Image 1 (tube, helix red, strand yellow):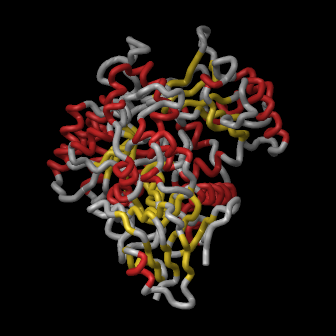
Image 2: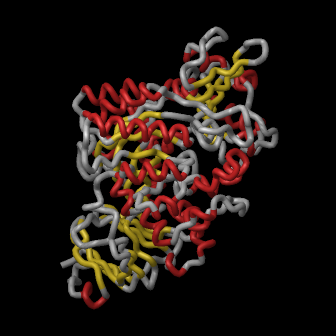
Image 3: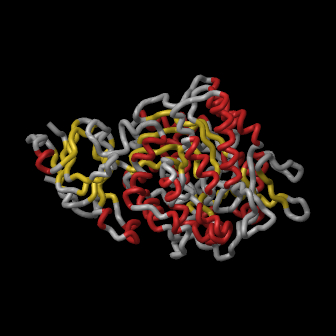
Length: 540
């Protein structure tokens, strides 16, 4: 008999036939029946908890196939530049002063989510302004894209950056006309500072707990972590999962943001391989960065940006370097992937996949492309032929779509091209890239369906998908991207009981209102880990 039964619902199974049922029965951590009310009621005993869905939608738990759980969580421990109280540089500096007063001398003062375009002054703070906040604390302000930052003099000294320091490959240490440091750091120069501004193990654990709470409250039951703070990131995640502080399931990419090549090699040498672990924590692909961000923009393009005709973005690697590090990981059995936003970077990564598979053929490799932003038609054909799994970020269209239209013009018509991917038979798994943008899966689904920016501007409306197709991107496709479609990603008997209940019927909701839906209940492993408290949830 069942431990929990859901009745009278719009059960979106995401099964192969896209069937919609009425009821679900759960025993232990597994789904044991899906069907009509009459069929599932036979599993009810006096001990069964019966939940009346009252016609609301029940879905498989959302899977975010690319976010940074540790970074998101630890960001909550510092200054949040996205807070409504921070609308100007002076607001930011005041918040940093408050944080410095609470922080022991010599320890980091951090701010995240900064966007100069949202400041009244339309600029970054200066190194001198950060020094006025404190010269006794290293101060680190990270842009919302997580590819740029600005730091004070103490932080620059810790990083070993001075006016004579050469720019690292794939990055820039900014200087003024006189050659003095401005504190502004781009790409790999920023990544080094990011890793130096690391946290204690206790801070990691607290950040992970906070992140997990937020994720399950929005229906996320599994995440693919895209890297953070190197080895400490992995230790903290595993300990937090073991302690039960993290409820979401984690598929952890092997990636350190600054020196990912060295870190990947160390993990290969240690004998790690994709799939190691269990249903709560599992090792994912080996990952490196190939280019910059789409919203700065610094992504590597085949043709210049419309907004900057002399600029084609930044590449982290030459082709032979990329082939060597990821080719070695492929040969040792890893699923391989890379951050690749611009069409030039995507082309390089596809070249890498082709070389790796030619040297060491493998069926069902499911090599991935994280973001796969500007996926031009010729690249789409190659993705389909190679059977790679792109990981697009539809919410970027909603949050940053206006900048895409400005920076890449007509090429925005194949930015995160979900329609083309589906039509080519490509399995693309939806993701947020949080904390770069909002992690709420319903915003990602809304954006994939509507292809409108926050201001209402159309951004490649030729790439719109149906609601059911968008749901699949954030459920079954995510499970496929981690080789786990046999145990999760759909509501079918025998699969893990990772389920969510919305506050309305998503299939009957107007497309323009999808982002306004809320998660009412989240179940992971057969346990109700979240129930909305501010309104009655009907239970018998």
